[in-house]
Every structure is written in C-alpha cells, then in structure tokens.
Image (cartoon, rainbow, N blue to C red):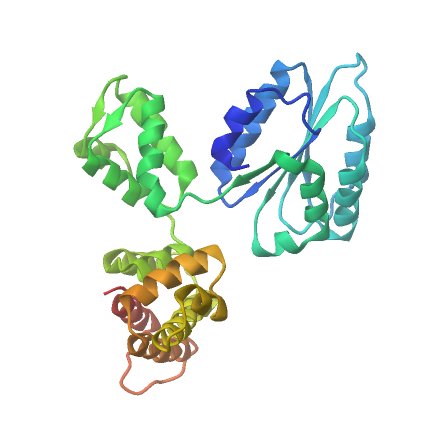
Length: 341
C-alpha cells in the first residue's frame, strides 16, 4: 500500500492482519510518520510493550530472535521495531531476515523499516519479507517537486491554515528535497499564526529560510521538464555541496542517451511505447522524463547534448577540450541550460 493509504487501512484494526509489517521508501519523513501511525494503533489495540532494535551488518542478529520469541513477564502483547540502517544487512543479517519471514509470531507484531535503493528489490531477504508481510508493505516514495504544492496545502490545512499561491511557491522553492525541514517550517508557521490565518508570501519571506537540498533526480527533473532556471540552481547547489561531477554526470548522460535513442526510433516510425521499451526507458522515472524530453527535443539536439556531456566529463577529469572553458561546472551549466531551453 502507499503511505497515504495507511491511516485508512489500519483504522480498521491491525490485530487480525499478518503480524509482520514492512516500511520502505525514499522519503524519511513518510517512513517516520508511517511507523508512528502503526505504533499508535498497536498501542490502542493492547500492544503495550515495545522494543526497538537498531540493526546493521555488524549487529548481533540473535537479539532479533530473542525479542520476537520472549514473552513479557506479564504476558503483554508486544511490538518489535527493527530499524535497518541500510539495504545491506550483511550475510548474517540476510539469513536472519529470511528466517524472520518464516517465523510464527505469537502475541508479537514486528515492524521492519528499511530505506529503499535500487539493489533492495533484488535482495532475497527483502523478497521473503514482502511475501510474508503481504498487504502490510508500506511504500513511502519521495515527494517530487510537482507534488510539493499539494503537500504543503494539505499540511497547512491540518493546522487550520491556508496560504496564498505565491506563498506556496516560495515554500516549495525553499524546502524542495528536504521534507523533514519542510515539515518543521509548517510547524513554525502553526506556532506563529493562528488557526484560520492565510499565510502570505511576505510571511514566508520573513520566516522561512532556504533549506532546500538537491540531488541528481532534481537535476534530471528540471532538465527534462524544461525548467532552465531551476536546473542551473541545482547545479549551483551540487557544486556548493562539494559533489564531484563524474559521480552524477553518468546519470544525466544515460538519460540523454535513452532520449536520443527513443527519439530516433520514433522518427523511424516505431510507436512511442515500443521505442521507450527498446531504449531501456520503461522504468517509471526514466519513462516520465524521457517522454517529456522526446516531446520537446529533436534527435539532433539530444545527440549534440551527448557530445557536450562527453566534453564536460573530460574537463572534470582535468583534460583540455578545445573551445571549451576549463571550469567543468560552467560547461555543465551550459549543458543543462541547452537541454532545458
């Protein structure tokens, strides 16, 4: 189930559902809130004892089995929260998690939280937990830039507040990519303004600092949707964070290549869906961005961008490219601006 379905689902009770829950995703705030909701519901249904286990590859995994099998001195129902530090629990952890998926859990609910990455879906232990949890798998995807206005409006509405459109735009600009900080800013607005208040752009300018954080996904979204100012702003942010261009340029180059291949196939008469699949862009995020790119750009422009990306890569590694600046970041700005225009 998706995060926004959880409250309605557990409101019907969790005691009769499978005793294993799995929370995963890219959005830390949503994962924390999902665990909070499940914890509160479990408490309301009599799971009065709670044990938290913070696990890593070096952890003593025998503690997991002790916690799941040991009954309370007073026979209380128990909630065990297993928090995985990463998607790589090590050999012992992988075996323990596979065993957990098959364990009978009597009087115990086990809640496993793990941050998502690409490799997670291929892990045998993760598949075993998914199968055991069934419908109790909670997905917490990242809140994308296009969804932020609705997210802010909903959060403000919880506090009985509304905001002017320009105020919402400023909130999104200053908090994108950092939902934990964004939530804190909404709470600050609730403390400073009464219920029923309409938050103005001036209120945001005066009280909300720029806590935005950008990564390669933000850059790709801006480039392929045609938002040149934002694309350049993300480049500045990545540079300020000390990111190395080769560490993320491959992802941009990969999607340009997909878009160029797709555009050539479409120009040759292939249906769009078949072209996307043939170019390797069938995965959801790739598909969305590449579809936007091929609707805006010609094959010639995309192929020119590939050449420029190669030049940026060489400059970032200390090579001299004729007719190019020696500052790879300036050339990267030119690349993203060229693509986003």
